[in-house]
Structure formats: C-alpha cells, structure tokens
Image (cartoon, rainbow over all chains, first blue to last red):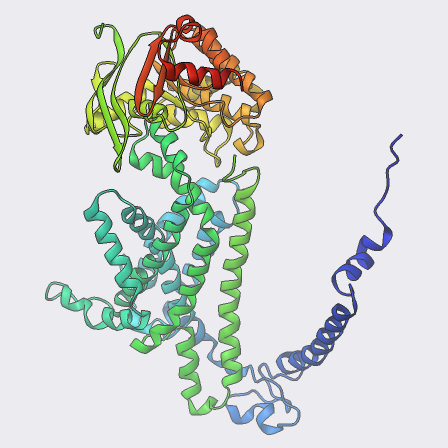
Length: 374
Length: 247
C-alpha cells in the first residue's frame, strides 16, 4: 500500500520560504540582514522627504507657495522636505504645454480617447472588443483634428503644444507607425528579390548607424529641402518623421530576429497548402515571429518613449523640456530635485505599464502552446 | 503511357551547389497508383518528391503534374500545390493555431470556403484520421502520432488528387507508427494517388503498386513489390534490403 507522504514542514509555508530563500546558510543570512538594514535606513528617509515633511501647496507657516523662497526647505533647511508646490503651480504646463486654456478641453478629450483606444488592446476579454478596436484604428485621425484643429475646431499650432502632450504624441505615434513599417522592412530584408532586400538593408543600416539626435537635426534642417517649394512642414511633424524612421529600423531588426527563429518547415507546410507569399506571412509566419519578439519589441518601444526627450535640442518642449524651462525661471531656481523626481516618476509610470503589459501578453499567448520542438 | 500519367518526371537533374543530388530521374505515376520510394539517406528521394510540389526547384528536365508543367510560372506552381497534398517528417503543424484552425486555415483563405463549412469539413477529416476529440487542442498538447494524423487531415481538407509523404513515420515513437500507417492504408484503399518515401517495408508490401529504389541521386530499380522483395535485379538493392530487413 502506498502511503501519502507530505513534504517536510520546514520546507513549506512562510517559514519554509524564509528558510530556503533568505536564511539558507550564514552568508545568505548576513546578506539578508545587510539589505534589511539598508532598507531601514533608506525607506523612512525617502518617505519623510517626499511625503511627511514635504510642501504640497502651503508651506509650514500655512502660506500658499508662489516661489522657491517660500518653500519650507528654503525657509528652514533643517526641517523642510520636498517642495511639490512647483509641480502644483506649473501643472498645466507639464501636462499641456502652452495649449490655450480655452481649448484645453480638446486635449482632455484626446487623453480620455487614448485611454479608451488602449482598452481593447489591454483587455482581450472586453465585451464588444471588435467595435472598440475599430475605434482604436480611427483614433489617430480623430486625435489629429481634435488637437491640431480643422473640421470646425480653431487651429492650435504645434509650437504651443508641450509637456506630456508632446511626449505622448511622439511616443504613441512613433511606436504605432514604426511597427507596420518595421514588419515591412524585416520582410523586405529577407526577400529573395535582391533589389528589395538591398534597399531595405541599406535603409536599416543607415538609420541604425546614425544617432537619433543627428536624425532629429536632419529632420529639422534637411527634410524641408526634399519637399516641393511652398509646402511648409510642421516642426513637430518633421521630428515625428525622424523618430518614426529611427524606430522602424530598430523594430525591423527585432522582428527579423523573430522571423529567423521560425523553422523552415512552417514555410514549407504553408506553401504546400497553396498559400501565397502574403497569406503565408500574415497567417503563419508573422503571428509566430511577433510572439517570439514581444520582449525585444517592448524593450525598443520603451527605449523610444524615453528617447523622445531628445527633441528638446531642436526646440520642442516635451515633459522634460517643460521641467528644464521651469528650472530656468527665477521663481523656481534650485528646485531640480523635485522637478526631475516628478518627470522621472511620470516616465516610470508609463514605461512600467508597458513592461507589465508585455509580461501579460507573453503569459496570455503562451497558454496551451508549445512553440518550437514538437 | 504519358497519356494517363498524373505525374511525369523526365530527365530531371538538380544540384545543391556542386552536389548532383538528382541525376536524370525519370518517373511516371498513373492515377490512383501507390508508389513507395526507398533508399539510403542522401539518395535524393526526399528531394525528388519535394520537386513535385516545387518546394525544391529542378534545374534540368521537365516535371508535369496533372497536365501542368512546373516552371518559374507562379500561377502554375499555385495550381499544382492545390492539387498536391504533402505530409512531412516533422509534421510542421502551425503551433499557434488549434487543431481545428490548422485544418480550416487553407480551405478558408486559399479556397475561400465559408467558415462554418470549413469547420464541418475539418471535423469530417478528423473523423477519418480518428481523433475528432482533439479538435480544440493545440499541436503542442498532442502526441507525435496524433500530430502526424492532424497533418494528414490538414492536407486532405484541401481535397488533393495526389498525396506526397516524406518519411511520415521517421520521427515517431515505435508504438505510434502503427496509428499513422493505419490512416495511410485507409487512404490508399480509398483510391488516392500516393508517393510515399518510407522505410516501413511492411507498409510497402501491403499497399504499394510499385517500389522505387534510389541511390546516389538515381533511380536504381523500379519493380512490383513482389518482384522487388523476392527477386530484386540490382546488387545495390539486394544489399539495401538485406540491411533494412535484418536489422
């Protein structure tokens, strides 16, 4: 008769976990204690500085803060923490740039619509997902007219855009456009037709071999030369073209990596069923290749989202640009901790969201599928 | 003879780099004929049948399948592939699709069949290969023998006139070989034109109308199974048979 034996008590539950992971032997225990000590020193200090001793709108005297001299930490360096009032006062600029206040509802609607457009991508089980997806596809067009003007809306020139608005426009458009272009370039580079493959390779290698800053200058200075006379290209659009080209070259290489992992048998099976080149790629090859490439795709996308801050050098004020502008204001001199902390936090929220989304996708797509070996 | 041939290879030559993999291969296959191709590895047998649906290109000679000559003409290639089904050694199922989707994909997208009709067809094909209960699983959840049977069902769903089998049981565990061979025997008895590359000599004796023995890129011997196994002409065939039957 087989007796059912339970695992030893000391290896299960919280105690077991602690023993195995944190206090396995004396070196392990020493490291654990050292880390606990460091956290004990750091966490109370950072919480105190960012929250408990910090000024949000009023200083410790109860006055509303309007410049850096009124911050508690400047009035009483011994006790004051962060002075978040600078974010509070300049919040509008951080989020909308110099967008006219009367028209700002349009930006708010665009933000809300962006959230709605992302919804079907985030939740596969959303009811009526198909109709939400249609909305996602037409969202860029709606957003263009909403933000830029036209169709009855007053025009708001892009040089008034700034802050988070510019960061999101550049990041989302760059990522969304670079994805299909990258797929085409990756397929093109692997094409059997030498002309196509050479052109794609040349494009990818050229764009990838040039720093993004150079491409941004190139977009600003050179792009207008290629356009017919009399047509003036918007500054933000020029930057957007540069950013998209840059990102598509990287995306192409990432997807090419995924394509190379697909065994030749998949192509042969698709061909032997009578599928054309495009059907084979759309139905069989790309779904598998993109699935494999999700981690690097998200990786380069996060990279691009952060690299959009480089537009500051061609005079476009994104979130970081607004922060630097605020620091240059004599009213808020010296508050760089607060401003960089805030800007970092906003970027972190977006990039961390992207990273979690990629984990969710990987998990969802893996269920029940054994890729590769039989 | 060529009048009733459904597949006709004439003086087919092919090289991989400098390696002369097919040397003046001639083969005529009639409708409903079952051909078993055998030979040592590297003898060109897989390459030959892969030329028949143009997964490989031949460089000299002519291949005519069901009246269509295989040339660079893409339309001809597509038409031939619609006539010819193929089953691979490594199954090559699409791992991101369920069993049912694997089977319905080509009928829906290549033959423009309505989805409901294609699903009905898929279930019928799965009945034929005796695994209808696996329809909603993914290939990774099936055993090798089941996967190969799905691969056969996937090919049959395109309603081909000719089926090519490229060592269909070589990647299988011994106890799964029989379930796949049983399906192939049923198919042969149903009147399908088949070319099978295999080392399963028991299967060959049961179903083959003709045996083809290849070595070093050439067809060495072509004979009825009875003559091939009991009274082969060439010494190379005798040596091969003695090795494969007494291992």
